[in-house]
Amino acid sequence: MTGLFRRHAVDVRPLRIVAYRRLLIGQGTAFVGSVVTQVAVPVEIYEITKDSLYVGLVGLFGLVPIVLFGLYGGAIADTVDRRRLMLTMSVIVWIMTIGLFVQTVVNLQNIWVILLLVMVQSGAWAVASAARGAIIPRIVDEELVPAANTLNFTVGNVGMAAGPLLAGVLVSLHHGFAIAYGFDAALFTVMLYSAWRLPSIPPDGANERASMQMVGQGLAFIASNPVLLMSFLVDIVAMVLAMPKALFPEVADERFGGNVGWLYAAIPIGAVVAGASSGWIGRIRHQGRALTFAIIGWGLAVAFSGFAHQLWLVVLLLAVAGAADLVSAVYRQTILQTYAPDELRGRMQGVFVAVVAGGPRLGDLRAGGTASATSAQFSWVAGGFACIAVVAVAGLLVRPFWNYRTADPSPPISEPAPSAAPEPA
Image 1 (cartoon, rainbow, N blue to C red):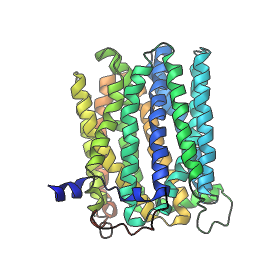
Image 2 (cartoon, rainbow, N blue to C red):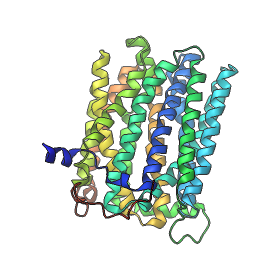
Image 3 (cartoon, rainbow, N blue to C red):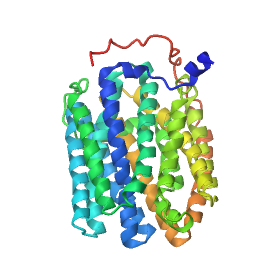
């Protein structure tokens, strides 16, 4: 039993590295508050408008800056100190959160002000995330990158599970939206402190200024590698076609008496459970196939959850979807970080941020628009089945991706980590 546990429990070796541990603590703490805001914003907009189409606009206003600033921010991360860049952009995110707090306190009731604040916040977050993703391969050894990414996604999903439940309580209080945004701003200060304490991390061999030409070079590198290209495309398909989050406020209002917190929490709860039993992930060599099957599992679970009218069953099926999403996210990030040389990692992470964060926002717009034209259930279920069909065909047709194998898997967790001795805490 001990051996079975050690083989399948989450690999915690990266936590021995102080710089990584600081980054993880800051990220995990900030996630709780940021997810509270991510729930509060669409719920506030739905309360003002009573229209899921406007809720979908949150995705559109977040998508454009994430794509633009994610791509260009990745180029910047390849030319400047990544720690300083992450800290600067995190400060901007924090200021925008304070802006959301202020507009609620003064009772503006103006969705366009809310959307503008979300747009600026999303752009700064995209640049900070590109820098953070490029930092991880520099502070942990390559063989520990899958474990580090699993810990990142697991801790993030703990916040994403706790955040919606907490948000559901906070927004129901008197002045609930102001309390929610204020809570986010307070927790985000831990991220600022964590970034401040990181060591300086200049990129290797940086000798030019960020430019759109550098962005083009990064995109050309992805386009010339079918494995990288497909890892992005299948994620776009999964998030655009099968992400039902924009429908949660309407479905909760119609079926579950407004109990929206559990819907937002279900996907990250499943991801946390999967992360806690993720020791096997780093030992899978056929990562292209594993990624394909994980996204098909995501689509199946999302589609069937759309038929359910019992809250517990919807939560259970969305949790299964979240577990599949955790597996796919780890493989996508690991393929990207280990495939690209360090001088391209910032740009690769910029594209990753644009796809991973921009895809769900575009999915919000698709889901909200489809629901407005048809029904929430049709939008939810049809998106899941469409995701399955597209990913299954694409995964089988692109043979380099389907046959992609990694090098030898990481050593067992019982072996000592080969990374440098950790600094004193």
